[in-house]
Figure 1: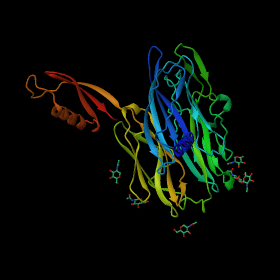
Figure 2 (figure 1 turned 90 degrees about the vertical axis):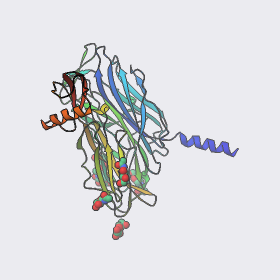
Figure 3 (figure 1 turned 30 degrees about the vertical axis):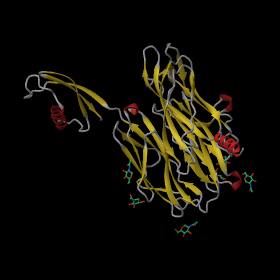
Figure 4 (figure 1 turned 45 degrees about the vertical axis):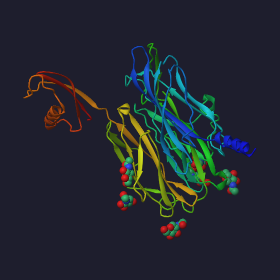
Length: 425
Ligand SMILES: *[C@@H]1O[C@H](CO)[C@@H](O)[C@H](O)[C@H]1NC(C)=O
Ligand SMILES: *[C@@H]1O[C@H](CO)[C@@H](O)[C@H](O)[C@H]1NC(C)=O
Ligand SMILES: *[C@@H]1O[C@H](CO)[C@@H](O)[C@H](O)[C@H]1NC(C)=O
Ligand SMILES: *[C@@H]1O[C@H](CO)[C@@H](O)[C@H](O)[C@H]1NC(C)=O
Ligand SMILES: *[C@@H]1O[C@H](CO)[C@@H](O)[C@H](O)[C@H]1NC(C)=O
Ligand SMILES: *[C@@H]1O[C@H](CO)[C@@H](O)[C@H](O)[C@H]1NC(C)=O
């Protein structure tokens, strides 16, 4: 009898576990028959890393089989953020929309949102300016950000566009089925340039809010999009090309004795990068970002971040942290945001620093094919081995080839060696 009651209670809490999502897309390759290979990435915030739900496609996306990996977890198990990545083979015959719908958000959401719903619109017509399909706006955020009810705070959300489009933010619209319901939090104002402002209020507004935003990309000048049938569509500077959701929880916390940064709310210190700083990185080479913060009247406990899965965080104590990311060849030529806050604790209270974000631009590697004749003392039929390749590389480096280049032998014949040099520059 008792066991049955416990099980019912468990399934009751199980239903309320969502803390937001987001999705971005990057077209990778256009096939002659009209199919476009598209890299889709999404983030899921849940109260546990074991929760999961799938996006589905309205359109022709083939089988969507994501790889899901953990990104970061709040240490007291408040949330876990995971990233799903998948390569969709999309046939852009109709407008492609990806939908995420289910239930439920976490308990006590102040703006009365229970069910979750998010929408991504994928535009894949060839742009007249870039001669390629559109890339969506890029953004990310941790599942829950905090502010004490008596403090003013601006959240400068990360929003950029690899095509150079203007990204605008707005609250989701019920009439466009972008959330269920969209219910913008009364305690927040949003500018179209993606600054979310919280003004100090009294304690009646404390609690979690579901923040359900939509980011759209607008061209800098009128462009045309050409579909696989040759049909053309114009987009003016006031017409959105694609749209992505950005959903998370804002927690309005109990009053803090002081809103001054560096006392209870952590304050970033050098060498923490400025908000929106850009880092260049190369495939297979680790990029490390150093972050430091202080809080005189609380204990700095954790760095919380959101970014591509595979970013590793490390702490060297006393408020010093690093984030390290080694991009893979799948991310070559792409730009990805990484956002973070530093959390401090005092008894059971948690305090967040401001939200900071950086952009990591993964450079396009350069592949050079070399045909070379090497005069060597190798006997007839001798093999071009690693030692010989290294000697050739040393020679090329002395002639100006970057030393981090990789040299691979494609073909060789007795008096001729064809080698390919892959350079990271
Ligand atoms: C939102 O903007 C209005 C008008 O500018 C202002 O009265 C209100 O205090 C703002 N609210 C917040 C939460 O900043
Ligand atoms: C915040 O609210 C106060 C009154 O409560 C108002 O005077 C002030 O203009 C508001 N600030 C912003 C940024 O909306
Ligand atoms: C708290 O603020 C809300 C909205 O700003 C207001 O309606 C309410 O009367 C305030 N409560 C107190 C106790 O001041
Ligand atoms: C913060 O800590 C300092 C000492 O580190 C103390 O003098 C000050 O009173 C504290 N402030 C608050 C608001 O508790
Ligand atoms: C994290 O930091 C510790 C201590 O400084 C170090 O031993 C460890 O190798 C680091 N791990 C990574 C992944 O950098
Ligand atoms: C941590 O950061 C402080 C500055 O905030 C610096 O003085 C100290 O050397 C750093 N410690 C480590 C272990 O990196």
